[in-house]
Amino acid sequence: MHGSQSPGQPPVPGSNPDPGAHPAAPYGYPLPQFPPGPGVPAAAHQMPGVVRTAQVLLFVGAGFFLFIAVMTGLADGSRSAGQVTGTGLFWFVGAGCAFRFGTGKHATRVTAIVVASIAIATGLGSMREHPTGPTALLAIVVVVLLSQRATGDWFRRPR
Image (cartoon, rainbow, N blue to C red; front, side, top):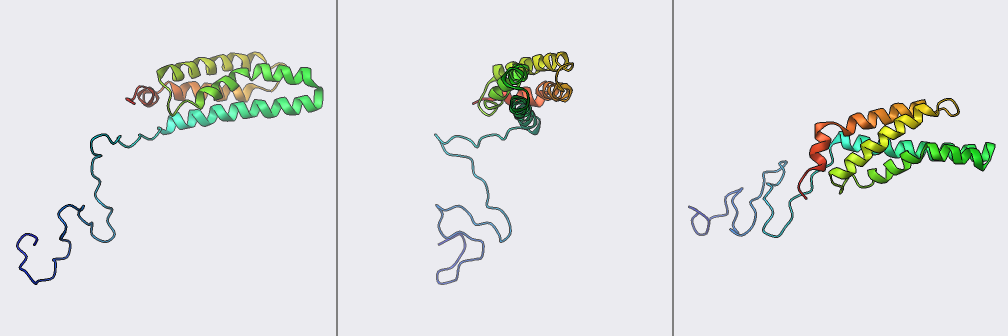
């Protein structure tokens, strides 16, 4: 029996005849959320948008240099492709850091900022031989995104 319900009467709508079960939510409403029990990890936090954007931009920069290196190699030979690859080397390292943004710690963020800063310098320095100005701007955006407070909080979160 449940509460003040008399024997033989049908259950009251919304009442829970099984006291061990979770209460039912009214139609159209989400089920109530209960905290995890002992030994069950809490739900993983989602990566903030600024971190995800920096991650995607690092992948885009590395992909750009890979594409340009292949196209340059086909047009001018392996020596020119090697020069483009050397210019984009820091983007490839940055993409490696970006793979660790979900699980990495504060050192991952610092490494990505340093690598993006060097990518700015190499991008601006090689503009005379290669069209790398847009990648320098992309690296500036990555540094700005990785320097925000939300990004720092993400990399310092408890695991």
